[in-house]
Image (cartoon, rainbow, N blue to C red; front, side, top):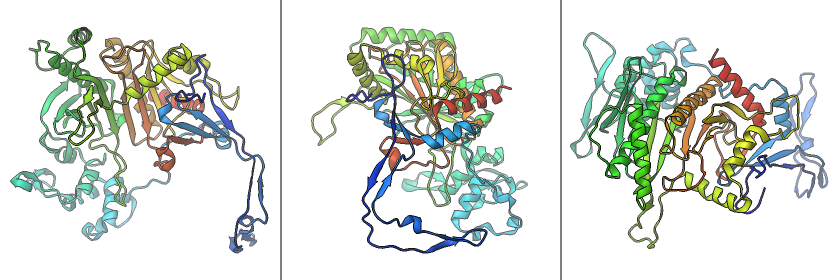
Length: 533
């Protein structure tokens, strides 16, 4: 459907709409010269020439490979192009979808490396060792090359890091190579004692105050930090797995960990909104589920009675995984493997000095969805999310019309929410969670909805990790607290594909995949099945 701003794959009838390109065309040959040469030889000695690259005359391209064009459900996210021939091949040959890089190895497999003076190696090699090495003794040899540590007299394990005076006389860690330090500290094979000293002990990453804590009787312990001077205006909060609950892999996470991380999110947003709305907040510490529910309902009631609260939206995100290339490019934003960030977003940003006197809404990703679904209802007299849910659950058909291959997009669902593969994927592996009941933000999400969301978040990252994903970007899309619409709470999971780092196509919102979404959904279901058997 390409009708102005309503370019979406979700048809009002509850089916998906998509296009197909069947190219045939003529190309004028404007070449000025010919450079015929031998490229090499075949095994039987026959020369391989490049004459096919220098045709004579104009070109007639008859029946080039078909390409399916699927508009994203949300117009601002562009369009997905599915390469027909490749997708058909992949769907018919085992559904072997993986995010695992090919040809992975480790520096500890190189004989004699333990005899080499690491300080003599080029920095790119040191970064590669810090990132890929699985041999703890070799990793420990990198310690003096990235920072100055404090040691016990009878141990070679650092007990802390030395501090030096930085700008303004402030004491700062004596880190000599920050990139090498972070890459080494994020290596899962680094001994736990070193992980604590380098990244996990409260305070080692800076002076951010600890303002919350989740702990239970089993093994889950989480600190909540305030990042007061944040890139997110009005500050943000980070829930980090604590030094005595080390989690460097999604495979190490259990449901209690996720419930704890998300509990701190709900609790912080509810507490901050309650304070902002002038509610009596005498309690401190960890709120239980019933207390959270009572506070949530009181906040909703208070918002209905106010004209406009200062904060009207939430932000939640999770950068899972870490990688740093030997060429010096940081490939993912995580500063600690398992941590989540969250914040409140104000309604407006005031005009900056020297700018035009124009007040505009402070940016929230859910606003673009809100604008679109309003237009959708106005044009079609149908709720977008009602149509979208029907399309995902019941109205979907494969673009190749195959009856012998999977046709479902849903990976897992319960009565409150579903985990599914969007018809138009981004990132060659995107999956999403969508609320099935009316809940557009976490203030509208009751305890049952929140539990469903938390469980599906764990399923999402677990199945992606089972398929080899090492870096996953996760984020929430929600509606404003003051909005009166049927916008549903959603979560996106975008795994980084080893051979799709992002280029000009993605910057234009043109996403290219070599598989049909139904085949990918089947791979996800199989991965989830392996986890639970």
